[in-house]
Length: 408
Image (cartoon, rainbow, N blue to C red; front, top):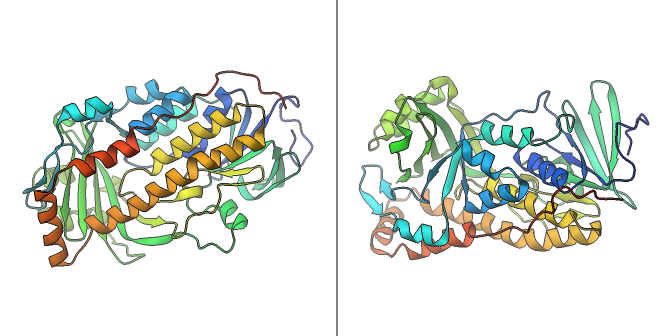
């Protein structure tokens, strides 16, 4: 395999080569799995350095099982805290309970838990599992196209425009994927969900004593999760007009949530103001008709950008990576991509739709709708919610054969 300058770049011409576009969580996970399955892998990252910013994230059991298949599950869990799905239940902003947590025996019966860690920790674990020269930074990918027996990426560096060919191109270039837009130009791009999220990490607190939990208010939510090292990860969600920004995002979080029930005010106060992050939440309004186009395959946000209301964005990207790598460990690349699409598209799009519905349900602002919702939550059984978590979390990926030399 060669780039536009004709250099060999150290590739073995008798082995399969994958070009992964994007060094986020999904892209690195795919690269790790393909390397594990015996492929040569090159990751092209636009940023000048391959590092992940961000606060915390949660990985339900489905994502942990995907990481196990990729060979990094134990490494990730070693730097993560564990909590039961739902934590100590659901409350109103005054602290009144809306829904009690399920019996812990229920989660043990289904083998479900949540690993909570920082995004940089997960990113670092994936990057460390790759050969050192696999990731090329400062590469702005301009496009990708399928060829008769592979696919080619065009990208720009400080030295000019180049091309790189592979047997497969994996598009993990995020929410605003150029590759997705080029493949399906008539489909609408990401749209604003109607809400934003602030994220932070409270420091110098007793994270071991924090069971986690969620609180709902009018058009708003505050969630908290334990981290290791005397820290607690929190996120605050609110309906806001698209593009709204505040000169002091920390002060805005305090204004909106600082009078909610304990321990919310203390968590905000224990967070360094400069480290509070703010993101608008976007989603794809129309699902893609396919996750593959010839030898170009999409995964993660590029394939199924979803809201964060079920905490499944990163989890679904990890599922994608595990399934794709397991399929590509076989001999027939084209059939492998077909099977990947068959296994991933329906499940990920159903979860994206469920996440959208959950956002509308919990972030309603109309008083009578909230009252009906809250009465329903207090009186109804928690069984449907528990079964929903099981349907998402109790998923097992196919095995990835380890260190098999995959010939072209």
